[in-house]
Length: 447
Image 1 (tube, helix red, strand yellow):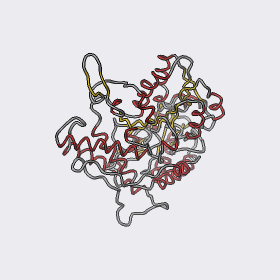
Image 2 (cartoon, rainbow, N blue to C red):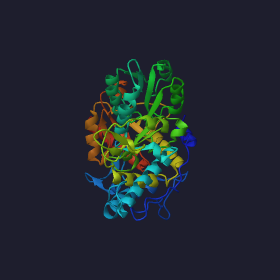
Image 3 (cartoon, rainbow, N blue to C red):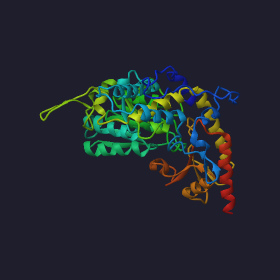
Image 4 (cartoon, rainbow, N blue to C red):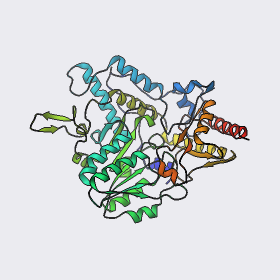
């Protein structure tokens, strides 16, 4: 299944989503290209996005910034920045229980964000969406709430080797507590999941499969829908880590038939500290609170507590209200573009980058699975990954170096660390050329 195939199978997202409460935050509409702006075939040009990203116009070490660390976090459009400023300047209030005008406005903005996330993911209802700090907290919530109630001795949790630590460690913690076991699903040499091994590992003991829709270190896009269908034959639930997927192609949780789907806002041009968990409504209703406190209760006395209905039952304390406002602005901004055209552009840019990097002596790209997002993790003979990142930084080029919180995936290639350039819709072929030229100078300097 190629990325365009994923796109065609997803429910289309329109720009008709209702805005946040009138007077609460600035209206966020589609980005308007400047007159005469060049456009690529398919209706998208990176310049359409770049003009909205203020930080891309700064310099680093005397050079124009080349941001190639999108797998770690994405840069924010002015629409998001203005929405945050507008909220704090005109509508800052706590939500849900206030009786005054600003409390109502803030509540409406917050719940408009929940509705926007539901539409973005193709979820049946906003009530299927729980706000969390990010993908890590979402997975921990599922592990501690659903996992504690449904896992027991002898149960299996299948986790592919390519997973981020945040989709491994929470399952190890709950497995230790419940005496279940975490079973790794091996990879093929190209970095794809070994689907034959996956099928063999599934059994009546399998209670959960936890899989990323796109790998943060190899870029692999597994056939999640097919893996989910196979898991469901054994009665297992499936959690999909969408942190790296949502910025690159549309997602439809109903088409995937995912039981859980998690993502982080900051990977999606939104602020840090905000994310969302989708769960099927019948599962969500059975999940007990993981944390207790304000907002998630109906009543409390010293003999008993009754909880609010979902999703509020799973949202203890004051939520990240401004983060939701920023997330709403980011979703409106992203969906103002043709997302099929974005995916096609990113695929072509990745192909260009692969070809260009292949010309750098001693450079070895990790992973060659046929279905991938634009993640380029590499080693360079004779150079430590941290030294590579430091060299590139001198030229204003930001990449990641280290284990990328995916040590088992790197160990699959016999590595402990690597450098990573990860692309987004606002990156250009010219920036790829700058990356390649800087790496070439590094190799020359070492001779």
